Length: 292
Image (tube, rainbow, N blue to C red):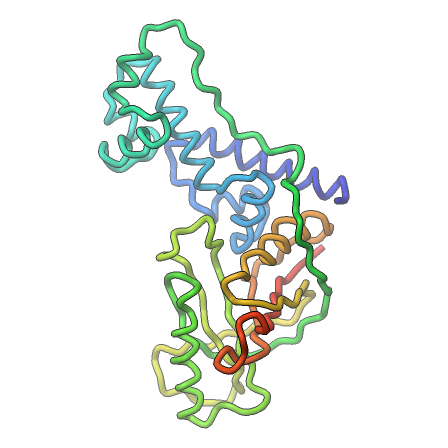
């Protein structure tokens, strides 16, 4: 890893942790934290997770509960007030989270700890000095990607269910005589599935289309993938295994590379048809726009 690149990423994520510390009672949404890190929100979750070896949400939850534990010991504030100070919407939700982390209810924790000369749990949110060992590496290329016009359906939910959306899309394409030998199948993925609840993941199933084609389905949206410098890798294997190359590309290769992820979601192009291709023979090209 280029030392200057590594230090740049670490310093920016330390700024994020400092911001979280100072705003435990606020709305720590991904766009705000990505802006603090000067990173694209489409890639921030993965970069943070790989470098910090924790999810952003995990860090926020842990620091909020540590602050709550300190307040339980040091103050006489009501448990509801403490819960609201660390952004829990209800006493029930706070109690569940606290029990999961500390093993006892907040009231029991206060009763056991308050007034005792004890050392409080430390606020731990330190970036590891070394990245975790990576056993698998992938060959990457840096290319000049050419603009392409797409049409597609949006999907909210588990990425592994987007196949149903592609089926719907290509039925539309076939019934409207839009498919030919040059039609390309592309998926856009806006969130990190290891950081966001699978029911809230945002993606889009797309196919290439001419700008002059008229659409007769209100659910379809047009989107343009722009021209630009792109890092790409070719993955051979089941779609269920795609998180491994993603984690390596965005969480390890990118911080090593001296490049920044551009403000555009990562996207995949599917090079063969899962209807007649064994899962271990599927070819997927993953793309990520980059800047220097």
